Length: 132
Image 1 (tube, one colour):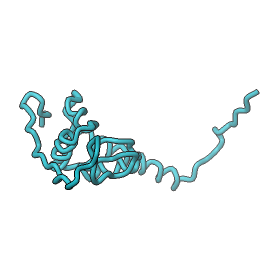
Image 2 (tube, one colour; image 1 turned 60 degrees about the vertical axis):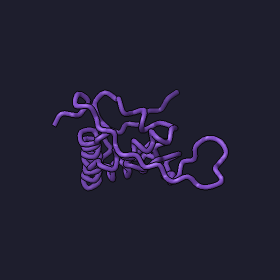
Image 3 (cartoon, rainbow, N blue to C red; image 1 turned 180 degrees about the vertical axis):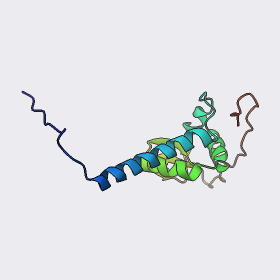
Image 4 (cartoon, rainbow, N blue to C red; image 1 turned 30 degrees about the vertical axis):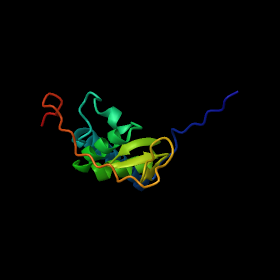
């Protein structure tokens, strides 16, 4: 048998309710900013493969896109708060909710360390560029 508690008579302190509403409003502003101002957002998901790739070149391209984004710091902080499992968020590579500074390619490590791969952003074709 199930016991259902009647919560209709429970009251919430007004200051707690205001704090919850402020948190919700802040979270909604964050989501709206990321979805409207993010450079990775084109509305069709054509860049998703770059941000969730295992290829070092794709990861470098995704970081280059994030480098010029105005909401990259907000993106990174929300991804760390959510403990995103993997991908490029805010210009940083995340794995298991933590920032990975140096991603190793598959196979045996080289005897001499390779220089960091730096790739300039590939320009978007005009028909894929977001309006506005």
